[in-house]
Image (cartoon, rainbow, N blue to C red; front, side, top):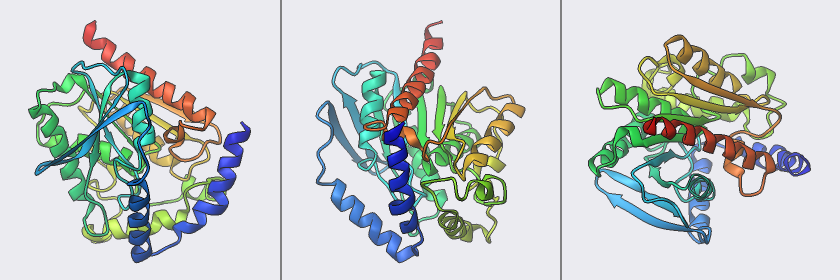
Length: 305
């Protein structure tokens, strides 16, 4: 659609070039973004309830008419583990609450470069523990995340399994960042086609994150594609065919299915990275959001069967 082509043009020539910055400029940019979003009012159809406790940070998002049932969504924002917050993703979490009629808990977690990815994993697992301690049942919780948040969703699930905690009902991952090795494949073939994410930016991020693991970009504690999927709940992966991170999704789908995990894999055509996050103005993103909504509804419907 025309609006998506225009948005891709904007991403390609305005946003993509700005990704070639170092740690200090990226940190300053993140602070600027956080400062700006702090003054943006949330959508008028949601109620925001901040949570700041020793074991968890984040916020509840409840759209008008959202059910007070025990079923909830646990959302983990993206941003390469460098950027983002529950506030930057309110546009999406608000609409997913509106679409599903469910309350959403949007997690705040520690970011790089001050913290390793393992800190984010700890925060995600502790956020899940907190929800369980609030009385929510594992079977009534669905995880979700975009980009690095999608990778973190998988890392958290893998850690939950190691800790022998009960698994949540299911999880959806939007263009997940799951392989920091940046080897060949779509990282090369889609380098010019991806309107949003620059290969050099991904390699820079991977180098920073892998520095905590002796430079091993395939370490399963930062690249969940190399971890174990056995015993994980049903997954939905949504991605675009023009993304440099396309293979990140394909690897997860293949390995998860080989290890007995049910995976719904949806590949879209020429949409930007994590496109459903832009559901407030992109027609394809609205359809992508509906696809996610249907997955969530189908998963929770099995609780009643």
